[in-house]
Amino acid sequence: MTKITVYKSNKDKYVRFTCEGHSGYAAVGKDIVCASISILVINTINSLEKFTGDVIDVVHDEDSGYIDCRFTSEAGADAALLMNAMILGLETIAGQWGTKYLKLKFREV
Image (cartoon, rainbow, N blue to C red; front, side):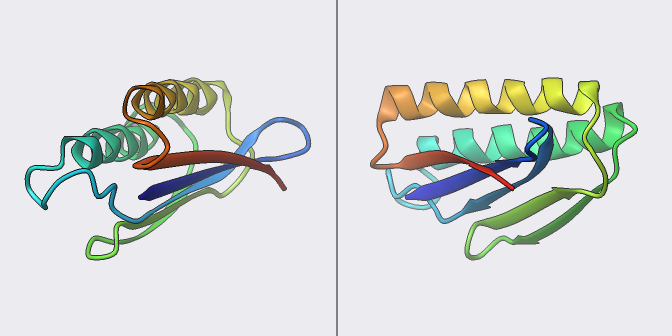
């Protein structure tokens, strides 16, 4: 199962998100759920770096499927839009394939 946690401040601003694990839907290389999640997460990170003025720190480990993406300061409006788009896609995946393969949760920090 892939577990994604999105962290927001008490001002409802994005602070960080983490992604860990592989979905387990199918064998490596054939897992369409894991591939879909990976595309959304990696594209969001790439888009944050290319299309916003926000600075992020990213730590990742490909073998375990771990990604930690932290905003170094309060996320701006463009970053929030990209994060909202990622979350919409992840919620759609969870809705279609179920929480057996993807668990999405939110935390206030």
